Amino acid sequence: MTLDSNWNVQALSALDVSAMAASENIANANSDNYRPVRAELEDGPGG
Image 1 (cartoon, rainbow, N blue to C red):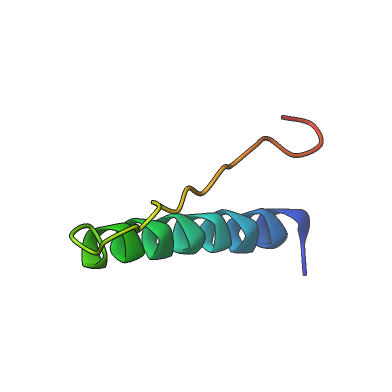
Image 2 (cartoon, one colour; image 1 turned 45 degrees about the horizontal axis):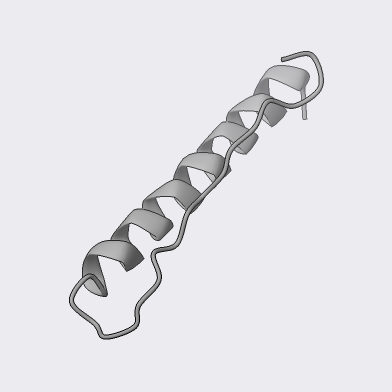
């Protein structure tokens, strides 16, 4: 796998995690005692 392909896979994985967190928050917004899930993304080596 080349560097560019690896970067693309990592970016898609990050977007997937963000989308899963958002969908869980929407699905459970009216549930008692529900605490929202937060996906925290950060830069990797080299920015």
